[in-house]
Length: 328
Image 1 (spheres, rainbow, N blue to C red):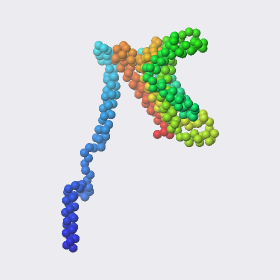
Image 2 (image 1 turned 120 degrees about the vertical axis):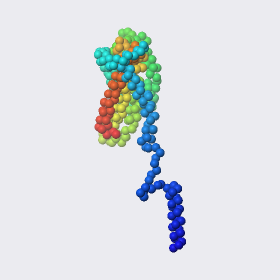
Image 3 (image 1 turned 135 degrees about the vertical axis):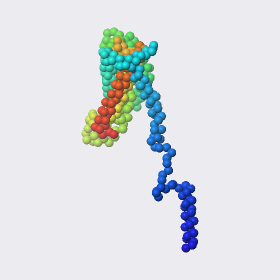
Image 4 (image 1 turned 180 degrees about the vertical axis):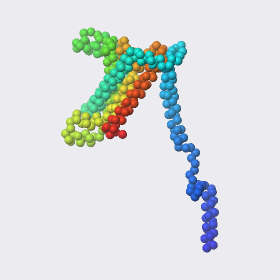
């Protein structure tokens, strides 16, 4: 008994020493957790702080400064506050309304052709046809070549005197003499669209090809066993499976086409007689060409507002498409 009591006393002293040295303190008999040196919300804000600072400097501040500038009549000589006068002038100008209409028509026609040609090209590339690898290589140059270099090539093609298109048309008897495609309003507008489609279609094709290759082959095999033809399989399997990608690429292509500047400026500089002037070109001419920075800033704000509204409509439509086709 004496031996057991001594052992208990020794063990109790050792436990007290260890509790005092490094154990977790207790409150009301329950162990308390050690206080964290940095709270989780604060740590999260520290992680996203660089991104917030980047967006504030690169995106938010330029937008705010552009809006401030749109409320002035800023020129090379200085600036004066004019309120909403620049916006009021834009609403009253019939020419500006025509520019907006032309821009959306340019965007709609160009994006529609890109989507259609992209689907056709992706379907051919996805099919087991001879020379498929070579065809994939040939699709890339329009996308890889710098836009300026490609547009210079199209300038040569569209030239009426020594251009390839005019020469072939004269040789086969379609036209009687040289025809400058960029010298007339209608032909210049559609020539610029063809060039824009040539530049943008390869990227759309590659995205559609990647989406098609992600469709399960079991679906095609089951449809083939049931006697479904190629066109039926394309309509009932391929299109529904890649529909979210089609909608996403339509939005991206629409934004890129809406903001397209190099193609139009290199080919026509917005001419002839404003036939190819879009909102981006009109803004550049106003702010940089005529040094009317306040009016140019107002046009830039209108562009941002139109693109924001278009993006919101797209997000609503994409949500509907995802629900319809079961995408998440």
